[in-house]
Image (cartoon, rainbow, N blue to C red; front, side):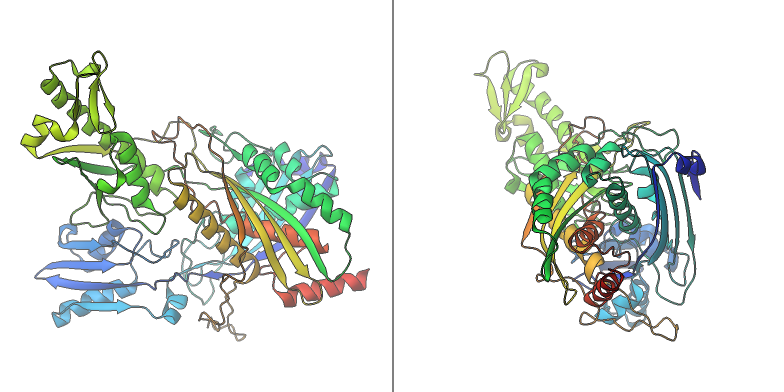
Length: 594
């Protein structure tokens, strides 16, 4: 239960009050690579090779269950084929493999089948939501009253965790009340699933904002711009954000998408013919994405000028290794191809928290930079001895150290006598604390165009644009890939994905395969997807200006699609997925009413 202000009074101040019920169906984790591991014992020492988002989390889980010291459990996770939250913890298969390896005295590999992953490795829980909202004639929100009932299955797995966060925190509103309740059902457990809770809440909130905008004859983008908040309203003391590019996400995204022109063209065409076009948009932000300590990085600069980067964080397919090598390259002035990376091995790399919550780059990159700066300080001292100058007068330039007072005095890294003598110089970097009394969150605004066949109920997403404030763009290639992937997952929630349980309510899942559980494919995703980075100059968040990206992309996607379908058809879809049968039925009901 959460409450601020006086919700009842807020509704009396409203020009329009609307109330609607919404539902999102359960989504199932189904990464390309199934869950699994290999376990091997050497005496009393256990080594596990696992597809995991966090080797140290697996080490802790396994050591606790098997009553082993942490020093006796080594976990290696160099590569993985997707996790999205489902691989943040050890599974029963990990323990079973370890026990079987102990009994047999041989290495044991246990990989779950696709059907087993559908049943055991978690889901995005279903949610039944009701949202009542009030708005003044000028677009000012006066009150939001939100309730949600959901389930994490047969376990206390947080079925409604964070579902209300967008309602509580995203848009400026003085009077807000939310209440969420979990119920137990005979089905599989929830697990973190790319922005837990947020896409569900966004499905309700962003459709409601569009309905309010229509009721007061206001553009949906303008309504959102009217209610921008520069503080985190739902946190104690309402601390300000270190940066918020939400306004620019909305305004620049609308401009790049051609929002007003598209709406004008569709309005001019009218609702004639079987094929209808519509555009929709939605905003969002992610509760985390600011990173957090601890993080320890070790950098080794070798005598030939090449570098070894040692970190415990996992690269879960997001390009973490690429980004960290670019941080080192920029700070030291070396080529990225000379950097070798050791990562995700509890036996040889430094402690790191799991790669989840869109925290890896903002957590690790400042520590990487700190390690590089430590190296530079040592190199300056070494170079000062060779050049016989004060180290404070030296600076770095493209692999060399140069004297400010006399540019003719310079020396390459590889020519430093101290480096040649030592063979290697080591820099250690630590992640610092998050800024006090500030909140670091990423923001998003997404725009899409759909084509609806009103005779068959088929929805085709024509184009998509995602405008995202995730701090400084470290690598444009990996950045854009995250945007494309997050939009694809959101389209799945909107149009295709739903867990189906048996009609006898025994909890048996009847579509536990890739044929019957409909993941979006290349045919369901538009060829025209545009990634538009919004880069605020955030000097408070951390020393690299980084914020999370992986999760906020998915949050507003489904709601943007639903708003576009409404714009095309005049039919409001409040339950996922928007499949042809459901849409045809609603269109038929609308025709009868007309």
